[in-house]
Length: 252
Image: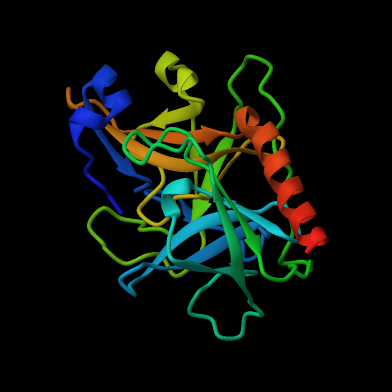
């Protein structure tokens, strides 16, 4: 992804003086197979017919959450994946019936970078496919012991995505600009890689606190800042969107 956005239209960049890119895991290690049963590999078909991938996570038997900048012409949700090259894995492949990007998503600044996907059929829960609980708030303090997972590019010098699910720990930083943008932020060498966008930021109580969004590269040469849409700030939107979608189905 690594989308180099024009500085003139970047709200946060106007404040910080740098560049923002779509979620580009560097560092980290392969996870124990199927130890993150909520993880979703999202296969995207773009308008030009090309294939792309994003991360995501399972909220219920009907819904997956991902990043709004992962929008595409169509999607297939892959559940129960660890090694994408392992043909013996019992992977559930479910088409997406409808996408619900946040109505206030800004594709230049990546503000409100959250999206819900309603699957065309229900997920079947088992040891390798389970939901994750969403965080309801941080009580004014940053969550600790956070980690991110994905199949994205694991090295800055390698273009291909990782065939196996990887994970790396990140430490959230206090940043007023992130707070005002309904985000959490981390910085340093380790962080999400290209293809990890939409995956969850999971913290100490094994709840999802954020959605992997974008990377901010300061113009002063400082460390990259990785941004995550702050889930506690979107709980009301998540609840109303999923309820309305299910009610619509019942009325049909």
